[in-house]
Amino acid sequence: MNYARFLNKISQARQPSPIRVLTAILQQSKPSMISMAGGMPNVRTFPIESASLKLSDGTQLEMDSELMKKALQYTQTPGVPDLVNWVKGLQERVHNPPAQGSGGENWDLLITNGSQDGICKSFEAMVSPGDKVLVETPSYPGTLAILKPMDCELIPVNSDKNGLDPSDLERVMSQWAVSDCDIPKLLYLIPNGGNPTGHGLTEERKRKIYSIAQKYNLLILEDDPYFYLQFNEPYVPSFMSLDVDGRVLRFDSFSKLISSGMRVGSVTGPNPILDRIALHMQASVMHASCLSQMVLLQILNEWGYEGFDQHVEIVTEFYRQKKNICLKAAEKHLTGLAEWNEPSGGMFLWLKLNVKDTYELITVKARERDVLFVPGNAFQVDATQPCQYVRASYSLCSEEQMNTAFERLAGLIKEEQSS
Ligand code: 09M
Image (cartoon, rainbow, N blue to C red):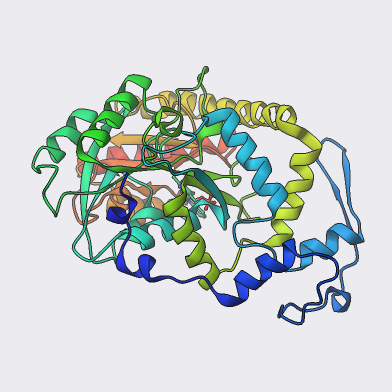
């Protein structure tokens, strides 16, 4: 793979910060070395000494003063080394990334400030003015918010109840010859528990999409924060686990499993691209919060991979039950007024209302009746187009609240239909 093709001028021009280079040397240096180089504060002046964390199962985790000193100090850009290794081990176990891309590059991993940060920096490293970027539609507004202000053309690729449609991808891509200089290079998609759709890709589709990506030399941006919230087992293999060329950049998140406020996620992919993202991090955040990373590491060390799997089961079961309650409430109140498919994972139900457009219905009338949903146009590349859909999240509401919310929505749909 020629990764230079994917990188824009800014990311190619990034140089390592001399200070950060010294920090890396310092961390490997021999005991006799005296450093007056590092511009770090002295942790002895910091007010926090130690902490103890009580997990919800009663386990007590102690962060003693040694651990706390590390947690309060700057760390390396890719992340706290033990956490990086833990998450790399998880990726190997679950996704078995290609040991080497077709050009002999290794894969690597960076800890980011949530997956959003990794997605943002990836696009910032790769999109050049005038580029065409393929985006699964409907899509996560957080990604559209990154891309829309960029000087690029977003090309929607349709999806249905089995995720992104490979035949639509082929239709779109067949407009270009592989040698065309304006051919799209990037494909962004959400493979599981889609936001907003709740849909997931089948293995057959993934294989088709991957082979189209090979045919047209696309890099796949696999945004997969709901991977561990899949309701059906065995899991469909990820794009990263199907990858043989090193053409997948994968975004994972601890937000749905451990904490969203900690802001810890990761980006996994071929070294030549991750190097550029790491340089961007050096110039911006330096690294994801070390305190967050250290707290997370204590939990993951306590659990090991098996404990992590058990936690995943508990979380998935929680959302599975919420999903079932939500479907029951939808059937009770919205039958005949809306259509939907059963979510295969995640926390969203994507409702197609029997009305022409949901924007005003949701943003004005529903608010007046004290019920909030997200109107479907927020997930479109062109938000000005009418949209029949709304996104309902079943993560936080009780059964009673879901019933009341859908009852109110049903009333609004009926009024809209008769007006
Ligand atoms: N709504 C997300 N999605 C969301 C949302 C959110 C406050 C977040 C996809 O925490 P991170 O950075 O790992 O997650 C970012 C992310 C990336 N990719 C597909 C996501 O769904 C998070 C936060 C309020 C509302 C929010 O509505 O959908």
